[in-house]
Amino acid sequence: MRAERLELAARGGDFRIDKDRPSPEWIASLRRRFVTETEIDRVLTRKMQRRSGPGFAPLKLETLVQGVDSLIRSQFSGDFQITDARWLSGGASKLQMAFRLHWQRPGVGADVTPMVLRMEPAESIVETSRLREFQLIKAFEGVVPVPPVFWCDAEGEHLPHPALVYGFAEGVAKPTSGVGGVTGIGTQLPVALRAKLAPQFVDHLAKIHTFDFSGKDLSAFDKPSVGTTQCALWGVNWWERVWEEDSDEDIPLVRLCAAWLRENPPLLDRAVIVHSDYRLGNFLFTEHDTRISAWLDWELGRIGDRHQDIAWTTSTAFGHLAEDGKTFLTCGLLPEQAFLEAYEQRSGLKVDPRAVHWYKVYNSYTMATLLFATGYRIAHNGKTHQDVLVTWLMGIGYMLLDEMRELIEGAP
Amino acid sequence: MQMRAPLQIQSIIKAMTDVVLPAIDPDNKLAQEQARLVLGSLALIAKQLPLQYRYDCDELARLEAFCQSLQSLAQGGTETTGALAALALELREAGVQSASPEEIEQRVRNLRQLSGAVITAVYVDGSSAARKDVRAAVLAMSKEQVLRDRSWVLSQGWEGDPKSIPPIEQLLGIAADVPASV
Image (tube, rainbow over all chains, first blue to last red):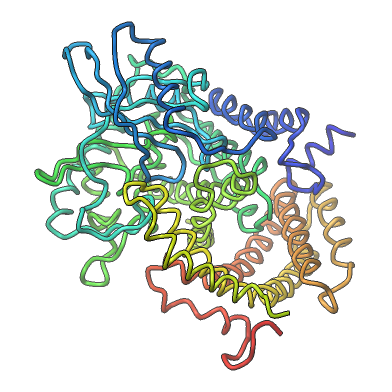
């Protein structure tokens, strides 16, 4: 009977589950019901096992400096010194500290390297694996611009929570004289600037999707089977599990969305690396030469379907109308049709509109889950360093829900 | 009672604007950003608070009508039958009349969850005709609700074309010259 009740709870029919203090039995029932990649399962299970623990406590810079010192010492045998530690803002999911490392840099010699510590709060608006992020960025060094990544504290052995240490990438996410909101959403670029950035934007996406990753260490990733719906269903299971774990107030439209996704999954025609958050605001560019200098935020990356990225990048949330008031610009850079044509030409890969449509619905489901379910749960439990931002961002979710509704209504 | 939330919120906003924000270290970007978010959130609360009860009553009335329609549209096997039975039980409970704001909110939450369970169940063991009907009903109900949700947060500034969203007072049927907290 207990097992049946737990299964019922997983389907949203039981009010009695205490999600702030989840039982081992309920966690196990969710794991059985929503099969996904091994590392995703591990990270989500860890989140639930730690949920009843303390919220995020303000940290002193000195604590993080000591943690970074310990992390580097565990993997680097030379002398070094950490200086100029300071907080960074930006992004809604991770806590960031900039610092300088004085060291004998391998292959370089004596160097003062600007670096960034990127550490999870007690529970993040997007719970992901630092190991996956580390492996993915390492894999793409020399392929597309990425920040150098140095060390990974995958389990928080040295720092209060799991973390990565990056090299500080040069550049800006939006023009220093431009308009933009938190997380880069709402940024509008001048015509001349977007004309220079757009070709690089398309070219890098094509390079990511055609990258041969077979020789790279991507041990934290599972590869879905081509010719099946496994990739699509792993994704739905991932986010429906998060919805069940984190949501408070239910949303009938979100229930319909999950059911619709399960009814219509596309077949995977080619397994590629998917960035999963490829948009304006997630790359840096240097203003003096207008070159994209680093692609950021790889934490949701997976081996999957290229249509996921295409659907995400062309979301209305990340673009705006051109000066004519009619032409919608993908990520504020170029018209959607021009983007798709350039992508096909540069990658040699076809874009299937039906698969793009499914992934647009999928992406809207992901966003609804993060904003309404996880956003609520982590702020409710005081789990982050910026609960006020997480709560504020919930407001954008209603516009995205309307997009979800229109997408399901207009499904081919 | 003179000491009410609107006055307190107004005073907090003034203190934050005049005293606290200028005193924050300009190099502490996180603190600068969060102070502005505190101000924005307080302004939003000041706008929403007097309308909250009307907003919840409005949602509940439409949600009840939607759930009634599900009773006839959703047909299927044991999953659907079980979910419908739980929804029917909830619908028989007391209506909006004389309910407190807390009861209204709880009832909205219950109907959201129970109708959600029916939707999931129909896609497990309902016929394709039932799925189609339920899908149409959910989309129609959501169109009305999400429009109100978008209007509710309009002042946050997310909308690309804010003029296309009617004011929340209009959507809730509140005349401009009538106090909202009736």
